Image (cartoon, rainbow, N blue to C red; front, side, top):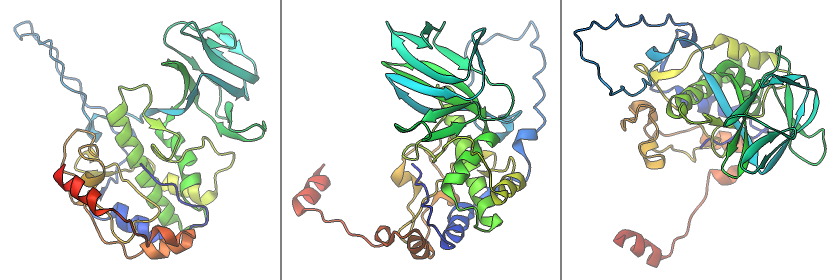
Amino acid sequence: MLTAMDSRARSGLPCLLVLIVLGGCQRRSAHPWWRTPERAAPPRTQSEPRSVVRPPPRTDLGSLSGEPELNVRLGSATELKLMLLRPAQCEGRTLSPGPLALNLEGGRLLLAGQAVTGEQAVLRFAGSAPGFACERGAEPRQRTVHGGSLVLRRDGATVMVCERLGCEAYLPGVLVREVEPDWPVAALAAQAVAARSYALSRWFSRRDKPWQLDARPAIDMAYGGLPERIHPNLAAALRLTRGQVLAIGDQVLPAFFHSCSGGMTADVDLVWPGRHCPDGTTDPGPALRAVRDPFAEIGARGLGREQVMHWECRVELSEVARLLRG
């Protein structure tokens, strides 16, 4: 779980991010997206036995041959309404710009009143301009603009909408909601590396799922889609760090971050036991161990959230006894 940074954040937070995220990690100077693919294994000879057991998918940087493509879950409901900003292609037909209704009928997914074939449908938009908008409120102007392809599928009794786009195209929609563009470019670059690392770690752990990232900050990182304008500082930070992630060896770190640590972080095992490493290992290494955070109070004041720095919790003795017995 990642906590979105408040828009009132000030200069204390960049130092916090650099200290907590980059301390003890190895920042990859190479661009994994541009690595040369590994050579294919030599053809099997007739004398070699054939095995029906398939090895598990690799979860290290060496297994990448290009930039990963993400499915970002935007939402699900019994009925969804989108606004197409440009024509879209889906299953051989062209959908015109305008409102688009998605719903279920008899267990089948209906797109503009017509059933789609199979479990999902993909809407593709030509060009790089925003292709659709998700209405967030009663007023049509209250939208979150997105720009990639759309993946629509049935999710139990609801319709699920995912945006499909490359990792680098996803990051601007994260940074505009997690940082302030007037921060130093070095701080923005640190956040870009952390966000890219988290996104790639989730891609490894969820790549066999219908979605790899959720647009809600309560589940993953705050994401609002393709911004209409990217601040030059954010663009510079993304350009300078393109393809760079935090890793120990060839294993990508999730690079969890927060708005305030309360003065000290915790070992990641205490928060997410066994869930922090994409390959299933339980040793997070020194990068995800507890550290003191002398910048936490500065950051909390910058956010206008002093209450997250100093707090107390009262627990009845009977509850403590019950927990000790259990």
